[in-house]
Amino acid sequence: MGRIEIFKLPISPLKQSPRKVYVYLPDDYDSTKQKYPVLYMFDGHNLFDDSTATYGKSWGMKDYLDQMHLPLVVIGQDCNHTGNRRLAEYCPYNVAEDSWIAPLKPLGQQTAEWFVKTLKPYCEKKYRIAKDRSQVGIGGSSMGGLMSMYCIARYNDIYSKAACLSSTMDINLEPMLELIQRKEMAADTRIYMDFGSKEVKRKISFAANIDWMLQLNHAYEEHGCNTFPNVVVDGTHSEASWETIVPLFLEYLYPELY
Image (cartoon, rainbow, N blue to C red; front, side):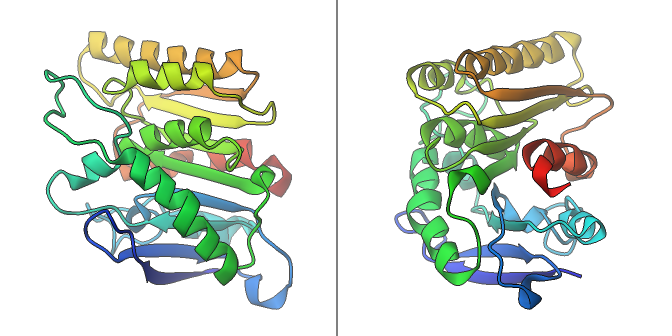
């Protein structure tokens, strides 16, 4: 079985520093000398263990990775748990004054830069993980999904894969579309994105979210990216629902591991 390691890393100038980082290492990590492909993720406390998950239910990623014996390292950053600071740290652009999330000072660009300039280099020294973008991914859900959409466009020279589950798309839709349109992205970029059919109650809200997802998907496709837009039947905005999607997005993003 694989194991989970936890360490702390300074995240200044953001608050709640140092920040916990959760790392899944495959079951054969200690018995080989190989370098492993890696997936960096947001909300690391929710990924592996129910005991650390905010609402008592994790994504169950450790169980799945153990079951499949996948040679993949997953590294998850703990969010800021104070007030609405998680929302701020996972929001890359300003939001409209009448937005449901306002008022908010966006700190997502600083968070994304910390992933690239602090977390990634530190982990590459500490663990046997790939540096080459072809084996490096980014992923998250909700606001973490929005951040993953931002990161795969802004830092396409760093990441080649993104898992964007139940992304919060409405608050930054226009600046995200502008970012994607002006950035150069490699043709081997793979992006999984989804939205659950039961995440919102009103049909008009569901239709709006699907429209936003397809707009973003089209923008990525225009750059030649490989995309997988998905409507999750009966999917909800919850860790229990995202757990069911883990096999789908991992096989899409890392087909060479299967």
